[in-house]
Each structure stands twice: as C-alpha cells, then as structure tokens.
Length: 180
Image (cartoon, rainbow, N blue to C red; front, side, top):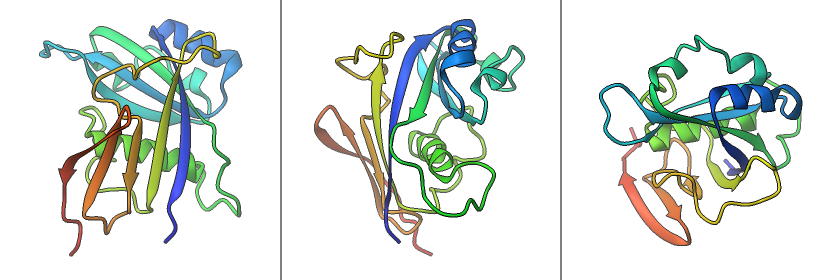
C-alpha cells in the first residue's frame, strides 16, 4: 500500500481561551495538541492530540481530556496543508486528518490518548510538522517541545521500526515488531 503524506501546519502556542477565539474564525476542521503538566508531573510534556470538524466547538471548558492538564497548559492548532485524499469518503472524518491524529497519538505515545495508542495506523503515513507563530506568517526556528518531531515516518501496521527525525538528524526512537 502506498504511503500517505500529511503536512501539518501548527499554530501557537495559545491558552485554551485564545485557541477557542482563534478557531472561531480562522479554522474549520483540524487538529489540536495540548502540552503541559498533569497534577503529578514535574516537567511539561505532550499530553493529547485530537481532531474536530469544528475546532471552536471542541475546544470548550469541561473537555474530557484538556482539564487533566492542570499546569503550564498550551494549545497548538493544526491544519492539514497537503492535499486531502481524493475519492469517495468512506468515513465521516477525513482520512488524512484521522491518520495525522493517529500517527501523533501512537508514535508519541501521548498519555491522555487512550484509543489511538494501542496499535499503529492501518495505512503507511509520513507526517511533516511545521510550526508557526499566532500571526500565521512567522515560522518558529525550532520545534515547540523537545518530544515533538519534525517528521514521523511509518510503513504501516507491518513496519518493523518507526523513524523519527529531529532537526535534520535521524534517530530511531523505538523498534517494534508488528508482524504476527
């Protein structure tokens, strides 16, 4: 099966309120990543990635996972910049958006994502992350968090290794055997 490539433009960091306001007019469907500390943590970590067909509605107080990030919480909003998958939609959620969320959740093993961390994406996927400031024009010189890779590459459910690139250096973060 051919690999799907997704380029994700991430904008931030925002507070939850700022993210809600920005998403009201500037975003439709997209991703959101939450960084911060849970009650027992001493350092800030990537905590959760989610998708929504309407980010403004999804980013509300009382969100089932966002409220678990209690300190230093910042939100990044992501847009798929690459062309979407052509053809008839099989699922309600866009395939590229779903794969981007799944790849982030699984390969980064985000602690508050409980469903999409159990198995790798069912299709080969390459994710390029690009980070922009909230003015939508100024790029960040480096990634916003040490654990957030520039590139994630997977050969799908039958792959032997996940390769993660950080700032031009190739690192094999973990090796798994997915073959039955």
